[in-house]
Length: 534
Image (cartoon, rainbow, N blue to C red):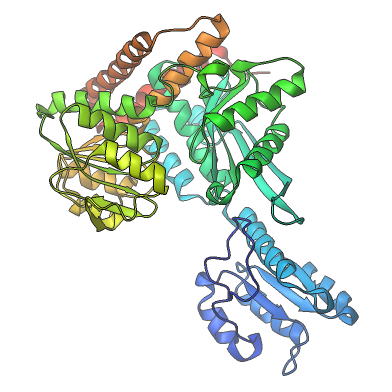
């Protein structure tokens, strides 16, 4: 059994890192009893104290969800082939075994099992469907439309070769592009690079993007893309090769009138520049509008990089006004210090809000007297993580979420606030900068406790709104000023916020469901207007 560090991030893993090794013959009961925690089984078909193939079959029958790699000799290749036919992911030949071959075989076995078992079993996709079904039931959505909108309209899953700088072996990477709805116009959505990306996760994000665009009244359907890899361990050359090959694989799906990618987790304006260049090279001329979130010098929009964080703060101001809460001198806690979290922290500080805690992947920093955001930004840029920041106390991410504050902004990952910690959340406004940070069960607990939830479908819509502005500027070949962009962003976000508030008040429902109904209703109206083909 190999430890959780043996994952699908494609990093070279020495063969000497197994956390635990057991012979299947003597420990079969242990394997069966704990199979839900197993990462991978590595079986010798020529075990000296038992029949290796029969042992493999027993393990696979009892724990079929665990990937198995079998070890065999040159004389037993037929036996190895039979094991693969019976369900083993791969086999290794003893005479050819070395550390790199072993590490690669184990990584690929885990990857393939994840691809086969987890693509549609994403907690995020389940959450997106639950939220949609709740809204559809309340609004009385037509049964045919409900079933049609529950899954994406188009999905593309690709595998492609990827070579690292420091060794010659070529690895296989999984990538995705999902278009949830084509009814409204081109589809729009980011591309993320993360080691846990799956088809289900990307489909959830595409679905949420559809409702977000509908709520903001943008002429787009929702889309999303991703590559299952850890970008933090890639060099610049590796990142560029990965991006250009992934772009080539999804080339037929994207285009300025078809599907327009943008940055997301693990990607940035540099990645968008490579994507734009690769697409342009393939079609034979420069096409700036194929992506948004690119550098300004290549046709990007002023204010795009900070748009999600700025938009979140615009909406926090509106929520505070609705609650008659004075922000000046108030306190904020921000989970996540990437693009969204760091910009939100900066703009909140400008409003006189005291940011008392922030976090990133390395942990959280807490100072009840307030943190200097400029100092944090400088430290994070120099050290790449917040860990070790000297002007605050190190706490865990779990502790950060439960700090007393006026504003809690989860701006990192999904499923951070659950039924297990919702009772201990001590904020007045929960402002969702991330996608899906709050589970359905936690949502209900927070509503009953009187916490005002600013849902993600509104809260992080600033990014796609300014992406729309960038696309419009590109199609018109006319550049807007930053003041024009911020003014239009403020107007669109506040209009959506007040429409959601009004519907929530009229229907006696929570703001999240009201916002979803606003977006879904616009999509449903458009689908009915276009009719059914053929």
